[in-house]
Length: 479
RNA sequence: GGCGCGGUCGCCAAGUGGUAAGGCAAAGGUCUGCAAAACCUUUAUCGGCGGUUCGAUUCCGCCUCGCGCCUCCA
Picture 1 (cartoon, chains in turn orange, blue):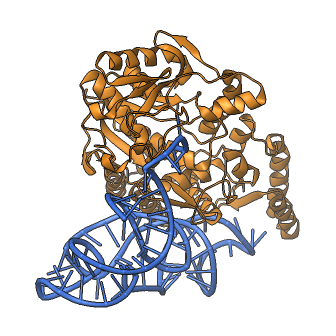
Picture 2: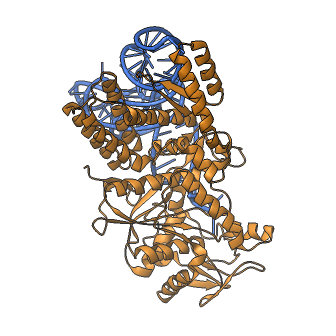
Picture 3: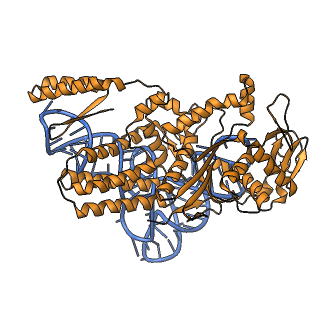
């Protein structure tokens, strides 16, 4: 197996990945702010994180992975107030929607899914630690972080701190901070706003403190990997580093990984441009979850992904090709024996697949390794040069492939229905389809091709594709 | 303005100092009662201009275009 190399935003180099504790990876990923449905841009990042997680697991690492749900922030407070409900009640709907979205995209659950509002005490304790070390100052009930006390500030994003002009922008608390760069650890309550009564006063946490407090609570003071979207590198992650490292004196995270954003049809995704999509939007248009997952996963995470409907269609076709191959492998009849060449070819593909993903999660390379094998084995199968003894190895390859990419299982329709995204319930049609398929088979037997074709056409109109095999059998699938 | 990323076949997208993976799409063909699947063939000199080099898409410089961050937006 190849050495795993990952691009570390800290330092900007691609380095060998070696976790702190042998065989175990402690990873924290910044999750969504649950003030609305998550959009495909969010999921570009979450799918990347999932691919990373799955690949590390495939490589034998035990994962200890935490993803947070930010369920308190300005938008949530404002929206909840407008809706006349508490913030917990307001966010619950979007939390559940997010879980469903993850499931439908085959995003594995991390070991811990945690909410900010369940960890106020942990944040307060961390702020107290910072207070003791004089990294904070008070202002009208709020508590701020004094960046001037932390010389390493800016090391992640290589932001020139001097460039952030003091007083250029004062935050909503309207309090004159010592420096514009400083950020709130704790915000004093505003009239009518939700707040917590704590040892450090009444109020609510600033945005950044939750990740520091929760990451260290579950993963220890030094984690292996911390990831998020590229936009989070500054100021969010920079501030997390400042808080955490000031409190502990230790390196907070050893590898920082950031996913590039996606564009939609070449333009920045934004609500005003009307190119802002949630999963629900896409599924309502008839696109499959597997196609979306493939589209999001196929472009290496550090490259901007231009999301297009044409591309989504292409992804669907690519998934089809892989599934067709898997079916052929599963259902084909192979002669007894084993082919040394084929065994070697499969081993080579496995090596290439691993090398691609080991190379900073180069999914395009990993996919190419799979498609190369698909083509070569299709050729071999056409020539009857694949034997029973070769099949297990090929299946193992596909199994490993899908432990990372998770697109082979043909359950898009069921999943959409089960998770409440709607779509026609066709599960009851199977018996009916089987019956028509049998009728057609009978017609073919008596060489009544007019009748046979009539049934093919009828089924086609219902989205059913029939494939006759050489041995007289027939396989059907939904489009 | 400061910092950073990127412009490779119609679309998506790898990659290397020595003449460019893979997927989708298109056209033609093989197979098939018809079809589907599969296979075969065809389709690029790598944004532009210079430089370094025996040789650059790959290194350097300039230009140009797109994008991101510098504002609690993944």
